[in-house]
Amino acid sequence: MPTAQILSLPGVEAPPSGSALPQLARRQSEINLAGLALKLGMADRPSRAIIETVRKLVDRHGFPPPKTPRFRAGKRLTGGQAVHAGSIWWRDPVEQWFDDDLPPGQAALCAVARATATRADLANRARRIAGAVA
Image 1: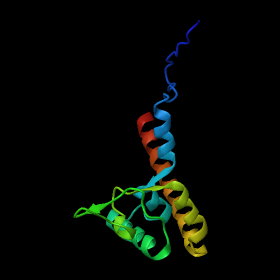
Image 2 (image 1 turned 90 degrees about the vertical axis):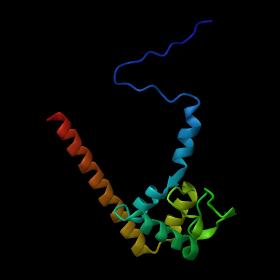
Image 3 (image 1 turned 90 degrees about the horizontal axis):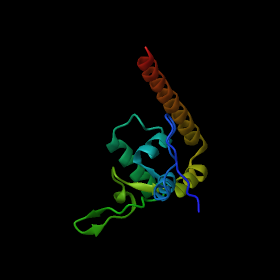
């Protein structure tokens, strides 16, 4: 029976191995605090302010709690107190909350903030590329 061989070509990345696919799928189905900061238009704010905002959203506005547990003195924290810098959320409930629960004005502000952050990121990348070429 013939066997297949994968050739490495310069400048071409190999596809993820079978064992990497579940990790890739999991990363795409999760969102961390930095991702929430971008969605909330708070990417330029200190992490402490982002954490406090997300805690209030969880406690007061039905935002989904993080999937990662947080413990203090051996007890599992719930609600907004479960939010910390290393928190991770399932992406689907977060997207559903943003789609359904944001007031129209806040949704528009978040969209503008995301667009601004994207433009800034693209401008930074262009400067780095231009610097590398020069």
